[in-house]
Length: 464
Image (cartoon, rainbow, N blue to C red):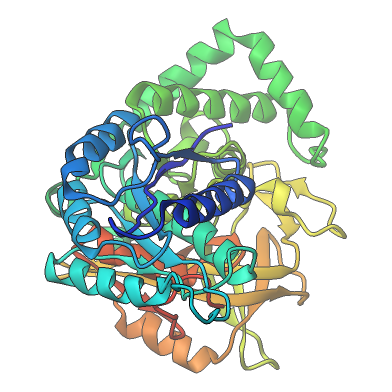
């Protein structure tokens, strides 16, 4: 299982407070974090680095930083065992320059004659110190380690860290050039590289077509295996066998290039060249790639592909991404909108009642399942980058050719206003689940990217 992110656990205490109580707290939340961490998240702590595995003195900072860097930590969680030490919290955050999460376990009722841990008091001091060092941070309300607030807050922070990691140094494979009329998908490659470290690897349609032909000639067994596996999930009766083979060869060619270029996502020129060059469009290849963990956008939409990679990271790799057009407002339901595209959605997301099929040219034909959905779009105008995100519910609706899902939202007129003036376009990345807060929280660490949620999100991790 791919590890999307590694979180460094740095327990914090005050130098003069009781070590026995601090160790009890440390063991309590270390065990809980190991229990609740998703399987795509790796952890490292200070066991064997500091005598008690707890940071409480500035003289320990160099050893802690060296350890976190050696481990390749992508973010730092600083749970407070008691009041903690704001000095080491602020300085560690400034030295590491990684996403930071602060939290402390809720204290029990006071016992007369005994010193309290004063955990909440300490986290307030630590967060002030982080602000003095100009270190952005995330925060979970003072809450019980066994509660839902802590569980959700920690898991969501892991997702925030994964989004930040992907945003900085991402690579996108651009397959072909954009369709000539699609001025809406143009982008500034220089700004992406300078602002975010995002690199674009070009892959021409002519070379792709040659690679597809070579695969058909030299890797027939892989092609046939792909044809067989896909036919087990989808009704392929309308698609000639020759087209099925070309489709699988196209998938393999792109996967080869993704691996060679170490790309995180793909922007595919899917309909003006491929059907002429190899006899089949790239629609369901996009769905196949997404199901294989490679977020892919249609119509050479590079910013759309970046949006899909960010959303994939927000799911911690647990959900495939679908790439959709925002197309039709429901004729009778004011707050329900049709998300559609000619056939690229992942088959794994098909509605349980649907019978997925594919047209002769490679377009999938099915509806997506019901459930909570998040859509997002990173876009820009005049050098200002924003990340739009919004949540709704996938519901049943009128049938439509291609791949589609009807999504009900809180207030469509408000959504449409933001999409029109955002500046955004009709292309969005979608995933099942609630990720708007995660995407918005990640922006504070990414830099040069302003959050733009459809509905207000809490600044507290773990809140709905």
